[in-house]
Image (cartoon, rainbow, N blue to C red; front, side, top):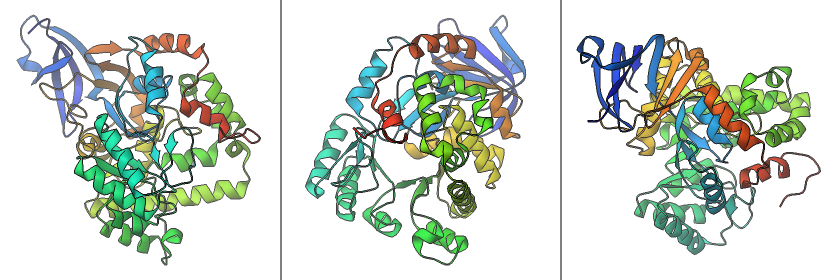
Length: 420
């Protein structure tokens, strides 16, 4: 073992439990051992963090990557993400152009799999029939992609064929309810739904939110709720958003697109509808958990108003408002997310796992707002302070951005800008 060193915090949350004054040993980018303070080797190199909580790096279950996002994600303590719709060749080339710049571990899902109509070019792919969908799944499996995402315009036939092909390759099947209803999507074999789209009482044609909750809880499907999407859209353009200091982690071009977006000046009635839909979604969370369905924690960054990394903190807060305890949410955004998605090397602090860690002032396992007290992130054992990350971001932000997701920021949100 070479140059073992230790991080010792007043509280250690390992993804499951909280332990006082425990140390994490690190060498060669991985965790060597976890032990109480009194068992530290004599003369060991130890960094001490009184008044702070050391946790696994956070896991965001729903992003759409673009290279500039790496800085905000890491600054917020997010070390693993799942990308749910992208042009793989383009975005991976953009990330490669960053050179040795640190970045979270990214698990890909490929393009949004649509029917003949496509809502979000260029991060989606059209499919005329079931055979075309099966071919895309086989192609993605050959590239090592671990999940697929069936999107809004996919027909029941396409969903059913793609899900069967994906399961044959050991891939997780994700869905977004739209032209195919919730009931049809479940019947097609989808494992996890996004945004609780198509899951409200009006969507299901049932009497009220309680009836919707009962139907959702009975269906053998997990959910990535992304409650923060509706919160952000309902309040985009507000003074509070403009003075959010975390905006420094958003590329200036994207900040401009958000400011010009339709949602920033939408009528009050539309803001009220988004707020109402958010509240109904929040009421669905406890019944889903009570029925044993996983509720994954994801942000949908960089959708308008959703700052990479910090939007995940906001999502965690909304889940606490929905009835989960801070400890339950911290488990969900670390070990819980990783386990459901099958990411063995993320979400926990244990010997042999990568030394991907986050340090927070206070204790987010008892006060979720303490996620806002992020002090440092470690990626493969290397400490990344917010100040150092901000300096790296400045050089990248000075350049224009041409990632597919960035192109959509203006093409889909800003009135008068044509789609590609």
